[in-house]
Image (cartoon, each protein chain N blue to C red):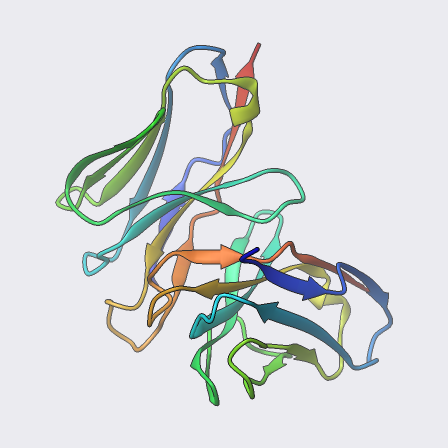
Length: 114
Length: 115
């Protein structure tokens, strides 16, 4: 089954404790991205990657890191989480060569930073 | 800043009627437009995309694009209670200036279909 998976689905952590949210897709997509979704603010892009070893900032990259060492994986790293990073996070992949093509979303990770 | 504007709602429509969702955008260079549906606590799922001016139909859904007026709309015919969700309009950044890539989303319209 073609899908985008994220882990963990739910995470409660404390300020400053490094964490990684994994994202994996089995569709051989080149383009992957991370979004956060907050009430009243909608979906905002954090980082995207157009291929292995190619990443770039989206609209709200502060406080996040990403890496793309393999085509299928695109982890999101929070080196020192803060409460304002409490959000619902979505990973997405696209079947085109850019993010302008249809994006398929993972199930989401609900993160709470205390 | 590439902006996408949607009325947040809620938009309440009786079952069986036509639901009309609207979206306006600021970037004239945008080429591709998408409608996603999102149930509460779930991930967005694609309903339709549209690239050309005019109408595009898929089952009960019709997307309409008017690039001159910079709006895109989604019509849902014979609305069902299962259509109750938040509908997100998105446009493609990759053809716009500034080197950005990906989709920029509106904040969504909450649609309620009343049985």
